[in-house]
Image 1: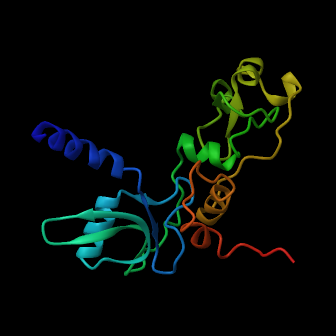
Image 2: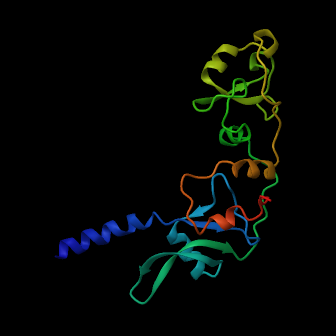
Image 3: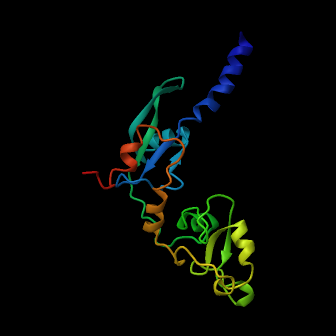
Length: 194
């Protein structure tokens, strides 16, 4: 009996990791859409006890301490507004997000790498304006040649996205799991169907 209690006690916290909390800025918008701004339930409860967030929605699941029982938060709102970053970091992930996770030559999805439009061998630099997402076959076909030499075209010209453009792009790629309590907060400012 004692061994069963210990085993269930050790296993329980792992099961509760399945209850992330959606984190909203003080204006009730997610801090980020892609990746979606989520905290573990432990961090959400800690922030609530430290009076840094308000709990807006909860799961049906309860957690217990020796003196308290409470529902796990599913949506929390920061009490202080966090100003979004103006500058977008030039990362592989953000580049793929800008390019909608598609090869900018053929439109294929998956197995992406990146390609310098003006090859580095020809003086091309690694920048938002010269790097695009590319599938491996297109990247190999282009090699270190110019688009004109190889007869390839870009789907759209590469440019540095603004933070809001990248955030809006992220909204097109919802995560695999959306708890029903999150939906109203994720798309409340989307245009309604007439």
